Image (cartoon, rainbow over all chains, first blue to last red; front, top):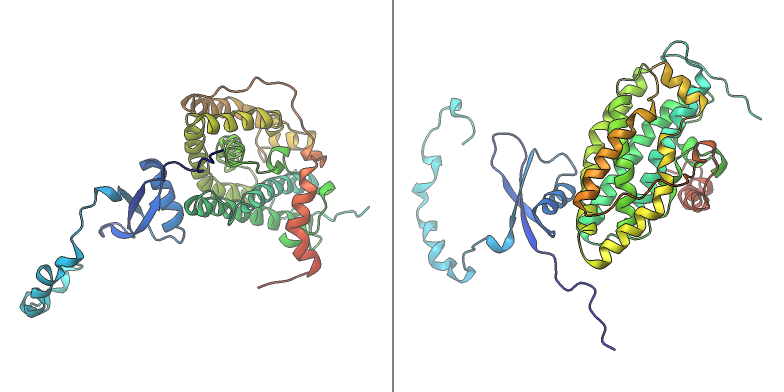
Length: 100
Length: 265
């Protein structure tokens, strides 16, 4: 007799982004498994916001994320190391501007 | 028998303190017993995400229980604190609803039990927030902020399990059928509780039944499940006549405190 595996389809993976206070951008904090978007939001709430970290959550199906190839990092990212003049520390920012 | 020395400081005028003590103790026992049941899932959840979710729900309820127990201890005035009330009372002194002591069963049964109770507790706590007893009202107001998530979480699962596979649907239907006879007790009130309700301290449970039924019906219809037909309803929890399951729950929950009184970490 053939034994069927318990779970035929693994639950999809979702990337979780949380915003820790109003006005700040959402930041990636991890991922959860869930059957659909509603359940992914609940799982994200339960796993990543237990200690008052968040005022807002986004979840995105991991399969929809297009990522750069780690093998391309030599020509994608390394050349910027020799261009320190691009850092904003070269400019003075008035205090009134606040968070940038 | 020990005679409790009740005092009424801070409570609504005219309320018999022993009635209020018993009422608050019942609310505390409800929260603790269901919270403990959910905590039994810790480390055994169907997924890491749901394991944490169930622990979160458990912690909400245990936190609510602590507030009720502390208040009950003050009302009694015998020096019993939350630990004494939670860990050093036997089955025949517990006043929780029978629904809440029923075993977790499978995940569907746990979610059905939680849906049935959260759909009741959300409107109940909203009403209790306006209690003439301000301390009780404040505890209810805090709990009322926590319970809508419980309702949503359980509802979303019941919808997916009921409208899911043949197996998940069968398990969900079976749980509804098995637990239905314990739903009547949520709306039952003894003379003492009715007296408190008449003074605006407790909530008239019967008035919440239409809200509960409508809320439950919305979820069940989306889950393509049918509400069981009302039959004979089992009661007794408030009179400390429990099903065989509570004794084992308490034995496990209380063993540490009884073996090592006052243990802390």
